[in-house]
Length: 64
Image (cartoon, rainbow, N blue to C red; front, side, top):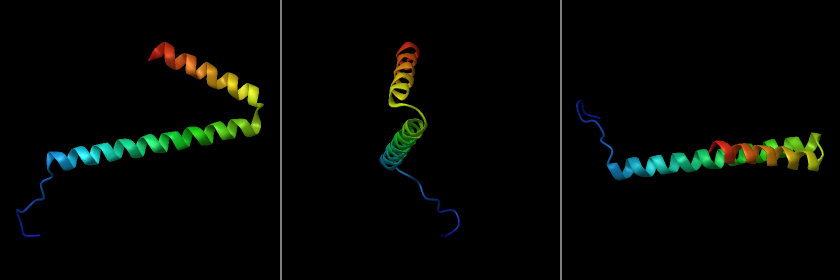
């Protein structure tokens, strides 16, 4: 690249990059949650996992 010619991103490209990053983080977080639930289910009874998830859901509703 010649000196002084810096690439400038357009606002549309920045929005697209931000949206894709948010979607990637959302998918990654969902996969992490699914793995954590699976781990709990392999070492706890499903009733205990259900109780744990219900407790966490209640906390989310309280502090949202």
